[in-house]
Amino acid sequence: MICAVYKSRKKEQTYLYVVRRDDFSQVPAELMTLFGPPQFVMLLPLTQAVSLPGVAYETLCEALAQRGFYLQLPPPVESLLVQHRRALNLDA
Image 1 (spheres, rainbow, N blue to C red):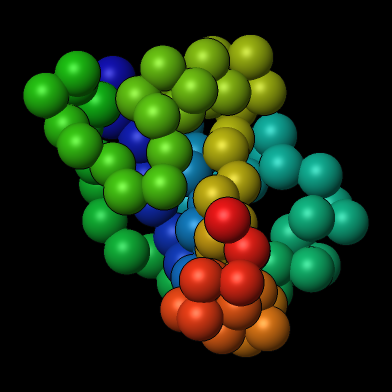
Image 2 (image 1 turned 180 degrees about the vertical axis):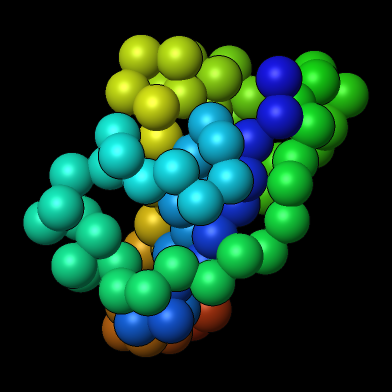
C-alpha cells in the first residue's frame, strides 16, 4: 500500500495521510478547513519496515483502511513549570 502525505500550512507539525494523492474525498470538509491548503510532502510506501515518527504503523494502516485518511497532530507541549520542577527534583 502507498499513501500520500501532506503537511498543513496553518498548523505546524500537523500531517494528513490519504490513500491516493490529491484525493481528499474521504476527509471531512470541516477538517480540511482547519487543516488549510494541503502541501504535498511525499508518497510513502507502507511496509512494516518503515519507521514513522509520531504514529504506529498499525494505527496508520487501520485508519487508512477504515476512514481513508489519518490526521497526525503534533505532540502536546509540556508545561515549563513541570519541566522546571522535574529539574529541581521537586516531583518524585
